[in-house]
Image (cartoon, rainbow, N blue to C red; front, side):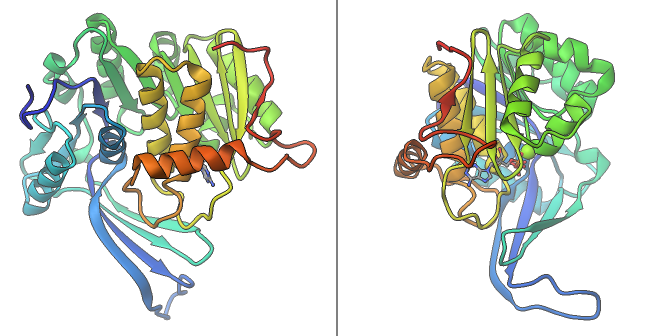
Length: 335
Ligand SMILES: Nc1ncnc2c1ncn2[C@@H]1O[C@H](COP(=O)(O)OP(=O)(O)O)[C@@H](O)[C@H]1O
Ligand SMILES: [Mg+2]
């Protein structure tokens, strides 16, 4: 039993915890101008918390390893996480720092701007990670957000590997640790910008993403997912690959969609559904997150099922981009 009285964690997320403020405006004002806020939300956020909450909503038992300051905001965020059925018994409350704050200003076209106050002391250290070793037990997943410092990510990967955990990476492994992190990872996922950094070239088409994902699979991970801006996601694994379009749903704010995507990918694989099923779940979970402002997921079974249905009916692609309805298996794949 964990501190929440729930089951022991089956996924340990190493990532950020922040207070999120979301402002929806018609247009972001220029200097010297103001804009009326159409909608305001304030909530537990940060990539780590968003992913952990998504995992809990999907029926997993996540633990979150991240840092808050020793202030009232930090206490409130941890309390919210507990209510969300996230085990925060190993979260770090750091003396002498304020909790991270992110303001997400979204305009009427779904374009976001983030104002980030992320004190350096709210990033994970190697020592923080080593203090959580007890959570990593054989068969458990470790989900590492590579936006955290490379020394912390590497320490987490080594601990997880030694403990017999599966390892999922979100983001770009720092160059010095890249070979080791890729060799040790089971899953790597990158958004469009990160995929470009990882491959050293902009990825503009599904075919390029699919080729890049296949290349990365050869360097270690069993499953790689790369996003292509405005088009979709390409997946590759040993023996197959798949391209999926974005689910045809109204986009209000893409914030947190990558974290929901990652949570569903891990859940799908952990439950033994195979890469194709996990890939569809991931795109559906992202689709269920882009329709509301802010990164906090709302992955009810109905919302995910609706997105799976939309995805299965997705329109044929325009030539040169992604996919026939339901997505195309392009690599003679099996799961
Ligand atoms: N309409 C949509 N349906 C499904 N997924 C979408 C849609 N629009 C964007 N996405 C996905 O949202 C994700 C955003 O990822 P990312 O930028 O990493 O978000 P964050 O880091 O804020 O969680 C990408 O994987 C992208 O493919
Ligand atoms: Mg992301």
